Length: 148
Image 1 (spheres, rainbow, N blue to C red):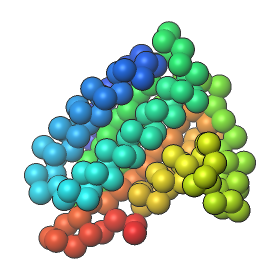
Image 2 (image 1 turned 60 degrees about the vertical axis):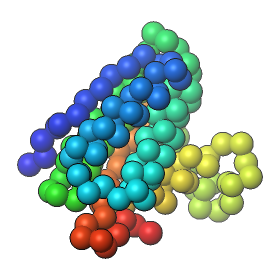
Image 3 (image 1 turned 90 degrees about the vertical axis):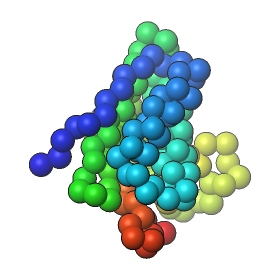
Image 4 (image 1 turned 30 degrees about the horizontal axis):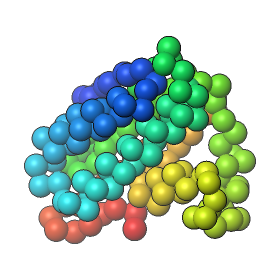
């Protein structure tokens, strides 16, 4: 069984994200003392993209709405994390289909989801479109177990 070890809820303000990411990264560094610089960078990027999406696209910068993040440590080399917003949700199937058929690198939106998808081992959207969760394996014994 997974034990919830980290949970943070914060108002939908971009200025809060930096502090939340620092807390997350401190937690991950304590949980994985030999966290590789690559995994550190990947996790920081994943959380940055997902938290910004939740604030801007999910809650539409509404300071009265909140974003929550949870992190569960799985075994000695993996995390399972969930980000939830209070917005109206989005049609993730449509976005995923667009990502699959289009190179979004030069478009104004959609790059974050594509980037997060490439850095995680599993990425899941709840049907409401208000919650996204991911699973990521960290490097272990000098061997990178990430999805790349």
